[in-house]
Length: 112
Length: 117
Image (cartoon, rainbow over all chains, first blue to last red):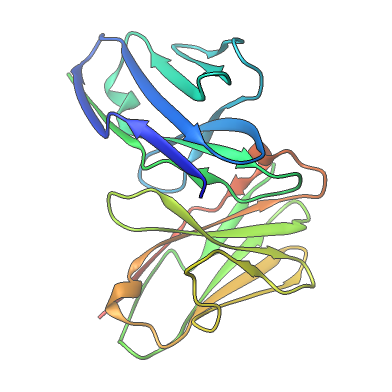
């Protein structure tokens, strides 16, 4: 059974701190790993990682994949209250247009 | 571009009734649509994959007779929760992709919150 595990489940930090969110996966036919940010409604796409060791960056967010150790991290530097959300990672498997296997998410709360 | 809408946003119904949720791709043709369910403080769980013009593929543990999915056109998929019960109360999210799209081009709808009394 495909499995995606995120840690921690929840995290409370102060504005300005740097956080690292973890995602490990055990899936068959792994293709790529996706990170999403979910606030009140549907998730919004952050990153897609397919190759090991190549960091993806978008502003204060960055992410990297380790296909040997089967995990990914999402870093957020200089956190702001607007970063408060649930961060989901999802594994893409199979050869076609496939549904995603999501982790349970990390609930991040940034305190002013 | 690539907007997916859902209707309704929020529905409350009595136990035993059926509820239909629509998912539309507004500016592209969605060859594949996915239905996810999210319980409070839990992650999204894939329920089923539907391809236009064919029967949906349901994930293990999802009752196909209870959750009827129809993907009759390239821009519309519907999920009907039949004989809904309180345990069906959840947040239902659809996503859509087009032929040849990579998985990250799965565009999510805003979700429908279903409350069954």
